[in-house]
Amino acid sequence: MEELKYPIGMQTFSNLIEKGYVYVDKTKYIKPLLNQGKFVFLSRPRRFGKSLLLSTLKAYFEGRRELFKGLAADNMNLDWTPSPVFRFDLNAEDFRREDAVVLLIEGYLRSYEKIYGRDSHDITISQRFKALIENAYRQSGKEVVILVDEYDKPLLEVEEDKHLFDHHQRTLKSFFGNLKSMDEYIRFVFITGVARFNRVSIFSDFNNLKDISLADEYADICGWTENELVSYFQPGIEALANKRKENFNKTLDALRDYYDGYLFASGGSRLYNPYSVLNALDLKEIDTYWFGTGTPTFLARRIKANGTFPPDINGKTCTRKELTAVGLYDKNPLPLMFQTGYLTIWEYKEEVSLYELRFPNREVETAFYEELLPIYIPETADPFSPFSFHEFRKDLAEGRPKDFMERMATLLKDLPGEDHNESVYRASTFLLTVLSGNLTLAEHHGYKGRSDLEVFTREYIYVFEFKYNKSIEDAMAQIHSRDYAGRFALDPRTVFLIGVNYEEKKEQRGLMYEIDIYKP
Image (cartoon, rainbow, N blue to C red; front, side):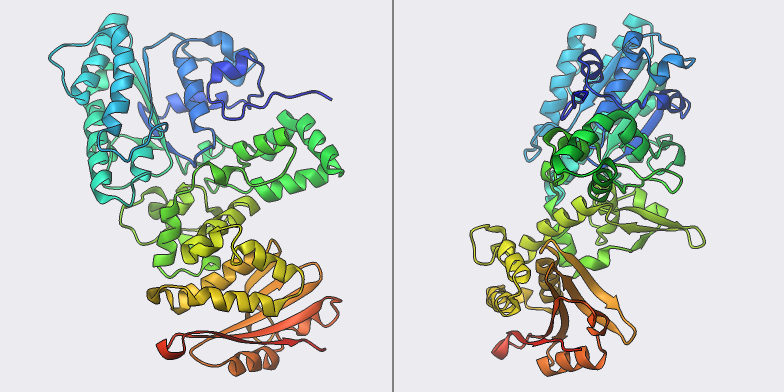
């Protein structure tokens, strides 16, 4: 079986080509990009191929046609004349210092000034950048190309620190603000990032910046379609199938379940996450990989602060304007969750011009819930704690609902006073059950009503009904009167009925419950 070389963590186009790593050809987009105008912006989640795309563009603009032999761009009518190329990667830095952005940019400027020179009277990074562009143009006789990777990393990293956020965005705005006035020296500018912040950063000075993030024709420019996955990685999928002792199609189903599902424009294709697929094929193990590359915990905190019930995130709708601009103090977390890759377009409702958002796949949904849980209940983050979600998982798997509820009741007693409210109780219980690793349904619609929570394990089914400041008797009565468990009459598994009341009054704050076994 052919051994493939997987470019995990590799973002340099020339290395992939020259060293024989798998390269999924995206060069067909070069010519259309050049026709968009001089200033182009693309938003995509991290680890989705933006850096490799910029590296590919860099090789093209440097005129390195030999690297493109056999690729789509080699057969296009393109101008391969080399241009001076300035690339700024703002990803690899810790931006929790005021001078971090300036120091990073100065490093790039020094390397380019060694080639094109520096005017001694230019002091600020903005002045130096302007002089660099002019010098490069005069010395080469060619318009320059500017590629900016992850422009928003300095902003996302300090999103909760208003002082640093404002400081960094002023620095970026000053530095890139020259580009609009340097049009005569510029051939092409391509900027990538995760979020498109509105009213801040570089965008307020770019009225001619073409945002292609939601454009149908560029929907598949990053990420892999299923056709690309099978065409380029069939030997790897076959090797994974052999390891899992199953056929090719079943392994492909598993890869689809975990890593497929991203959609960035209504006219695009469903896409696989490249980083996760590469790791799964290389390690021959389907697991969560992308999520561990850096999680913006402020998103989780924002969801809790808004009192959002986690399963309600699925199926929410946003306008196009909301999806393409994120404000620093926006209370709605959904647009930023879309831009960062935690939600994706599920359906475009043309009649009302709304995008329905959902989790793209199991990897993202499960891992995001794992990130949310410690925000609600910090003790669950300790794997050796009796309150680790792994312990709750074992309770459910082994048919011990009393242990599960006792563990839950004890855990909730340690919550700070301000967290004793309906939204925290409800979210905490849902997260602990959904992280059992089994099918979990929130607010399932039955023929007589809607159950609050249903959890399915190999041998057991759990039906929950929650009340707040009422009684467990009310909860159990509703389960029985609305026959929530009736649809399981022929299921051989044991069905537990669990009525729960969360009491918020200080004198008797806590969780009370009653457990019954369903008898058809």
